[in-house]
Image (tube, rainbow, N blue to C red; front, side, top):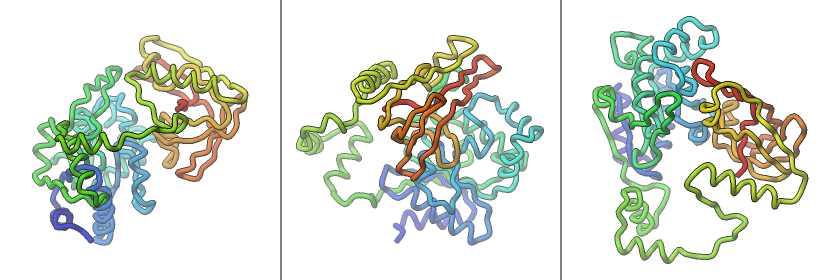
Length: 342
């Protein structure tokens, strides 16, 4: 059953309006987007479901064919300027499918919009205008969803990415004339927990919520507990300690690097990766529609040319080979295994 707010969104969208759907985690935003996909598809619309991350795409059922917005629009990892992307879309065979998606899209659904930067939002508008240059976003209907109190855009000085929120764009204010915030929590029924989560998201905790959180204190299993560190350097140091302490043969995989050292230092994949059988790992890059950035797996075996990894959440076991990372204007190239130990 849809809530009144969700029904209101459905009514707006089916009437052809652009809508931004806000609300904290658990209010049914992704569920509503799936419902809208089904309704619009039945109505004969060509609907594209996208997300800002590969992991978010896995939350949608297979029928939605969800993909990252970067892949859908041909933006790749954000290294290109808008004029470059438009030129590639119109003239490169490699970008032919992306151009076809844009030209034939009636409705663009985008989830986790908080991680879409102002720069990429405006670039997306330019790209979609290839469909019809007389309108923002090429007159494609927009249904964007996400909580701006959650994850912000990621800064990337290499690509001149400042990491500003997309709602700071004048284009955002112009195209989204309808904003609906979902407030009814569907994922939880504990009122105290819901109140605490609401306060945490806003950074202001009441005495009752502080007391509630303190009552949750309990000893954790050191082996299975999650560790949080302030920098990637501290994460790498902890991972090295864990891998050395683990039983089994140690395998070392070294990246083959070339180019500007300053830019090479910003590649997410470590220059030297140490692995052992059964150690947990995480993907740092999308390799396919299923093997997406952020996917957690466990090493099944290691060979001289790469590890075999099982990803239980998607029931896939596969060998991972080395892959190229490259930067703007061939500033660097790094050939490495796109895994990081956890």
